[in-house]
Image (cartoon, rainbow, N blue to C red; front, side):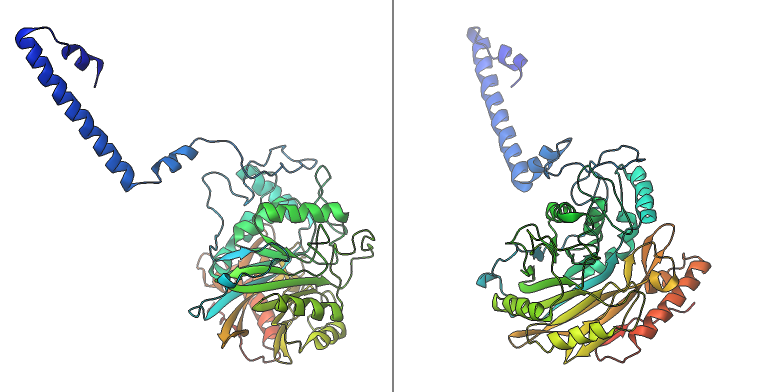
Length: 457
């Protein structure tokens, strides 16, 4: 009731008193009716107040510290969340069925796949190798989006492919620059933290991290990288901050109830010694260790075990003798379901060794290596199927990619050729890239490996 209604309802004697009583009764009825209507509205939209509560809030709740600003930058602070998005921008791909479990955790019996889960898809991509021209371009994108660096536009063309997979894993070849230290490139890399944010925004659920550059910035660089992964709620395998996290402990992803374990190893570390006080901080390739770690992952309940190997000779599309020797030593382990290779910076074949698929090399996903074969890359979309109570890799689709220098956008080749807006010059480059990649993939005819046909010019 309003104040005016209360003044009119005051008793004054005689007929006025009776009239006031009637008015009071009517007013009470009106108030009760209004309250009932309001309660009915709230019951229809129970989240209404929760949505309103967040409007206008400027408080960051992710707990992340702002990234250091490198010399020559605009000095803008990174106000984005750990997923790399700004308010009002498109959110990252979310896979509600995929989670990275804490390192070393055992699968819960209740989380095992239901009989209705018959197949899952896994995507794996080539090296993320941010040379300084890539970082400089990310700064330019960042000036447009209000971040120190922004890699999101570079990886955005891959988002439909990664988002369609149940699990997507990248290969982060470099550590991050520790807080307060400058960003660096070849020969000792230290990337901006926003590179991880860009991977998250593209749709990656996690990354393998063991590479020849893992120790470029010491343990501080490793810690910064893994901290950023944690802030983004992404998995990581191959390097570690603690003994409990390292030493060959698998990273386990739960995908529609299916437990997928990832292990990651590198052939060496460019002369940097493994820290004597932390021998568990990075995984070095050893056939005995790989088989033992895989067996433990399987014993702990993994349905699928994927081993990522940073190996081979740079710029050679043929697998090296070392690669073939390691593959022969670790297979036919019954505990390894798939081997994914990196490091050569060019695409290498997909073969089967003792019945297990080996993707020898995915090439570069993102880099400034300008030679045409080094701008070729490959993302593989792997389908795994239930075979009784076991899971096995059934098919692999190879998706050729191409780094468009200047913009550094990573283009899925088939889709870009099919796009009528693609300029003729770029279309010719894409067509040549497709031919190179398919020539390597189809060189040894491997059952179950496919590539989409090239669209007509």
